[in-house]
Structures are given as C-alpha cells and as structure tokens.
Length: 185
Image (cartoon, rainbow, N blue to C red; front, side, top):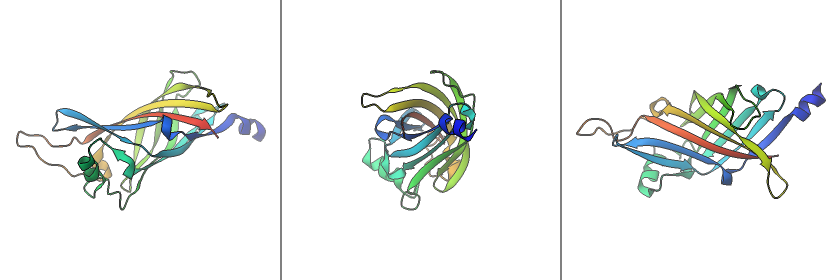
C-alpha cells in the first residue's frame, strides 16, 4: 500500500521564471494599477490517485514587489503597507483542495492560509489546471492558474487617503492572479 501511495505522489518545484504572481488595486477609484511579486519559491505535492490530497506551499519575497513606479514601490514596501523590514515574506499554504482532476482546463478550488505582514487569513483560490508536458531538456512540467480577491485591511494594510470628491486613494479590495509553472523534482 505504501509503495502505491509513494508512486502516486510527486513533488514539483515552482519555476519562478515561468510563473506570474500579479495583484491589482484601484487608484483614485477609477484606474486599475497592477503589480507583481517576482521572487516566488515553493513546492506543489500532487497526489495522482486522489488530487484532493495534493498541496501547495509558496513563499514570496515581499521586496520583489514591482508596480513599475519606484516611488510607489518604496511606499508599498514601507511600514504604511507591507513593512518589508519587519515582514520580508508573504506566504501561502494550502489546507484543502476540492474538485481537482487531471484534465486540462478543469476548474477547482484551493483553500489555504495567506500570510501578509504577519497576519494569516484563510483565502479561496479559484484555480484551473492548465496542463502537463515535457520540456526540451527532458524535464516534466505542470501548470495552474488561479484567482482570488482579498480585503487588504484584514492583513493590517490600512493606510489610505480620502479624496476631496469622495472615495479613497487606494481600493481596499485587491485582486490576485497567479500563473504557476512547476518542474518535477
């Protein structure tokens, strides 16, 4: 029994150079501004026989945040937002996977713990299995995409500025989009 389980479970390392972790917020309540976290590392453990037993554990370097504006990036890294001096990493660890299958295009959910600025909250990712294949160097790769939305205030990211015309400078809702490719360990 343990031999069958061992062969049915595989470990995959996230390939940061072929993955995208993107976030989006409204600026002045009218324009969507996007940013990325460039430094992602982690593993996926895939249970071939029972995908619900699969898991993901990912860590991001908060300093790798990039919104294409040095001034904005420095503000987002400051104590007003991520406080990277005291909280250098953002992490996610799955707890439950529902509806996963090995059919490309299949949709499923991943429930897990997202930790930002030392605060851990449960989030649900709406995920899609994108497929699996071999690369030209003999490695095997797998790909997933996922989306979620968080209220940044729940993670202690409360800085904002009121606008004269009403509303606030930065939306509280943050959309997160992931494109993850991983290589079999």
